[in-house]
Length: 62
Image (cartoon, rainbow, N blue to C red; front, side, top):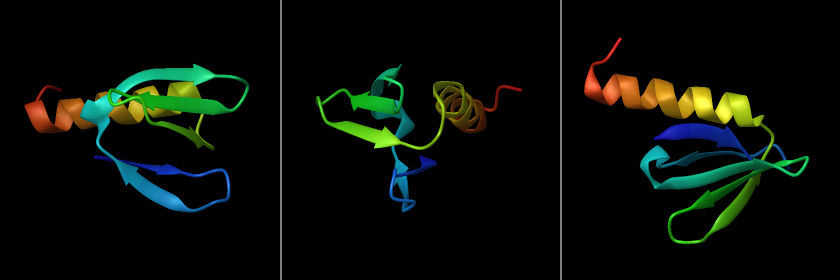
């Protein structure tokens, strides 16, 4: 799970395993594997880093 921020400033947590697409439109839009889309304040690079860090944490890869 990774913590992100909605455009209104509200933090929320999303399952990083469910992220299918991350786009900059220019706002960052995340599409989950179920088709749900959400816009976040973080940049594409920040979301990718959080997802990669999460994956490393759960698989013990450093």
